[in-house]
Length: 312
Image (cartoon, rainbow, N blue to C red; front, side, top):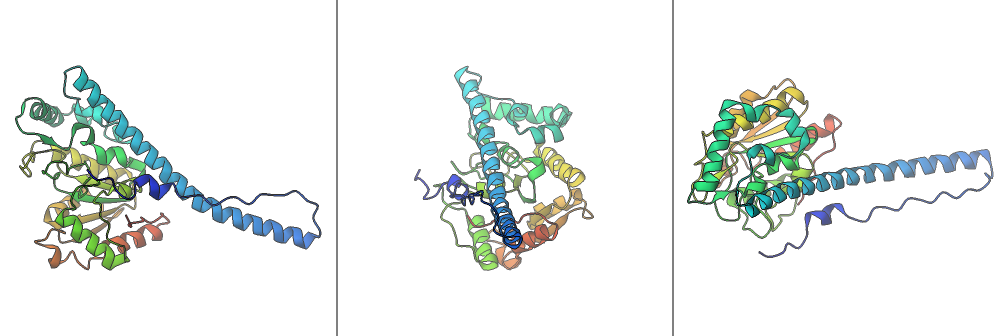
C-alpha cells in the first residue's frame, strides 16, 4: 500500500504561532500603558482562539488513536490466545458512547447479533469486513458530545481492504469509490475544495462528523448480507440517542435508505438535509448541487458552533 503524501497528523500539527513575550518595564504614560494593554489583550485573544481550536483537534486525534490502539491490542491478544474473537461490547471503547448506550448490548436482539457476528468471524468461510478492531470505528473516533453532523451510509464496502468502519471512507492507498468521487465533486462545486487523492475521511470524523453505517459488518463481495441481523436496531439506538440527548446536530441524509432514518430524529431540536444518494446512478438526480457542506457550516455557525473544515 502506497504511503499517502500527507498524514492526518500533518493537518493538525502545524507550527503554532508564538506568543508575544511580555517585558516588564515602567509605563511611560497612562495612555501608552492603556494602549499596550489593549494590544496585548487583543493579540492574546487572537492567538488563544486559534490555538484552542488546534488543541481541541489534536486532543480528538490523540483520543481516536488511543481508542484504535485499545481495540487493536484486544484483537491481537485474542488472536495470540487462539480465541480469534473479541466480544462486540468490548470493542466499543469510547467511554461517552458506552455510557450513552449503556444496557444496549444486554437486550435480546443485541445478544443474537453478537452471536451471529461471532459465528461469522470464527466459523464462516468468507472474510468479514471491516476488521474486528474497526467495527465501531465511527463511534470510537467521534465521541458523543463532539458530534456536530451525521452522515448515514448503508453498510461497509465489501471489497478487500476497503472498509474502515467509517461510512463512505476507505483507507489511504485504496482506490476512491465512485460515490466518494461524487462527494468530492460536490465539495469542489460547493466550497471550492480541491479533490484529494485519498478516500480517508478520518479528518472529518475527528472534527465531529459521525460517519455511521446502518449495518456495521459485511461478508466479502456480498453487499448488505448482514442486513436485518440486528445492526439496524443498534445504529437506530445511536441515532435516537443523539436526537434525544443532543441539540443542533445536522443530519445529512443521502438517498431513500438514509432518509427513512428521519423518523428517529426530533426536527424541533436538530436539522435534516436531504438529497439523492451520491452513487453514479443517482448523483445527477439531486445530489449534485445540494450544497450540503456549506449549508451544514452555515447552520453550525448560526448556532455558535465551529464549522467543519471539509478540505482533506
